[in-house]
Length: 149
Figure 1 (cartoon, rainbow, N blue to C red):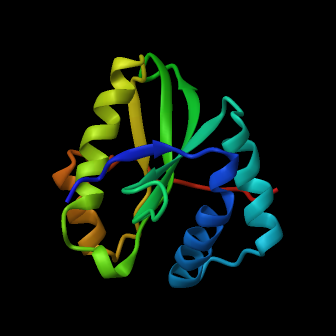
Figure 2 (cartoon, rainbow, N blue to C red):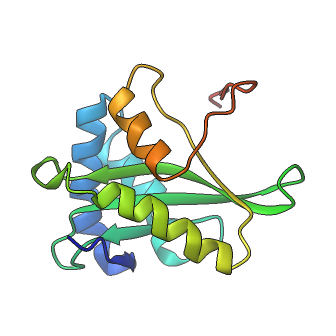
């Protein structure tokens, strides 16, 4: 199955909102429709801090991936963080997420990106295997920490 990527645009908001709501429900992420819309709309409008790709057919996406961009002295330039990646349950275990996580970083590297990061639940061995197949490696000395503002 092809994991074709389409850069999401403002007209994709409704399709994306449905997918994000499903992901947040599955992962028990507390969010409101308003907060999801407020977070997604600037990305779809072209804010340079991140982007959203629809995975699969643009009219009936199989999932999405959200990237946010930053700058890293350690990695020597622009880096990205996979903020969210979601594949509809009915089409999981077909290699779609792996394909996205292998192909998208290659394309981003051609654009000058130096590193892509993600976080994964320490107990989610299935997700860890997917990420390791795509050559993401744990950074044993580091732990992601957050301060909510």
